[in-house]
Image 1 (cartoon, each protein chain N blue to C red):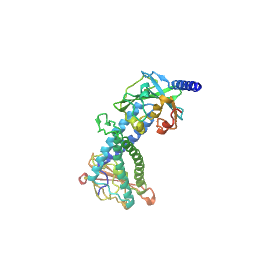
Image 2 (cartoon, rainbow over the protein chains, first blue to last red; image 1 turned 180 degrees about the vertical axis):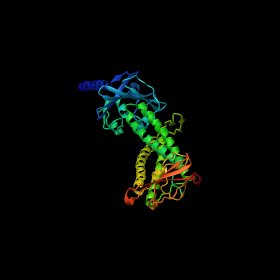
Image 3 (cartoon, rainbow over the protein chains, first blue to last red; image 1 turned 90 degrees about the vertical axis):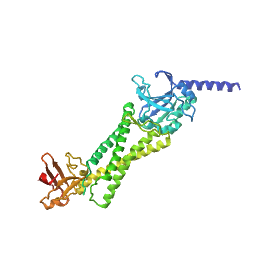
Image 4 (cartoon, rainbow over the protein chains, first blue to last red; image 1 turned 45 degrees about the vertical axis):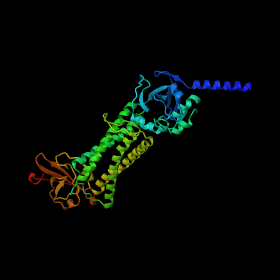
Length: 167
Length: 257
């Protein structure tokens, strides 16, 4: 019985340590953000998705993300080289979008943008957020990595994000 | 007998053509720039939306104008004529459907659709499924329009090449006061007085060569400066290939214009 107890504690601690290690924090955008997902493209580019710890804590699958939610998407054109940083913020129940160069100053201004919304409408079932399944799973499984076989910014099939939780 | 569209319709036609080309370019550029220059891409989308509204208004104007303007007489076979009518009808339908579906796709996402940064079109209640339907209609209609435009241009070129009928001339833009100043008399007979869009454009004198009177596409030019009418007749005879007869004649101001 004692072995089982110690064993459980050991594996729980191991899992927590692994989770904490996988969820990388950064404060480069003015407050603490946590990377909850990485989307690799077949052309070698990849995106990292970040949000704040309070959003990770508040996210409940099937319910809209709370007002004030900020999500960042860092585009990496090669390992370690940030290109464009896209971000969005929820204001009065609606998403506003913004972007800036990863090599330049941070610009946190957002506004409704047709080009962004038109694309994100494909993820309407998950609160206009493609990686929402990965965000919901992050508190329990940590950083998820998915592979998207589509080029450019063409969004992946939402099923990719569902199946890719903590891969 | 009417042989050309009115100047207003011809202007609408070519402005629409330029705008449709611009719309396609804007859509493609948006796709190319959305990663590296998302701010510029958004500006292109806003321009796409505004120009779409202009196309919609122009199309409505054209449809109304066509109801009250003479339409060129088409002399080809019935099946081709019906085909042309069908393509034109579908072109108009697409030019109306695209702006409407584009607007609905955004409006049903509760997006404030603005035109040229000022006018805000009505916002609709958020309805994602209807927005998705409108987006699908927009995408499919764009593809249909692309196919129709290819048919439209191909038909115009083929008519000119095989039938000697200058249907392109029906849409040529003039340079003088008369509605048809460059061309557009493909169905006119020599020795007839020409009336286009309720403007008496003059009298085409007979040409002495009998072979030239069969079915000549005639390129007209009006010399308004000295009040004289001059025309050049280019006659193509399919039986002998490319025999071109150019006749330069002139008539006195008292008879014409």
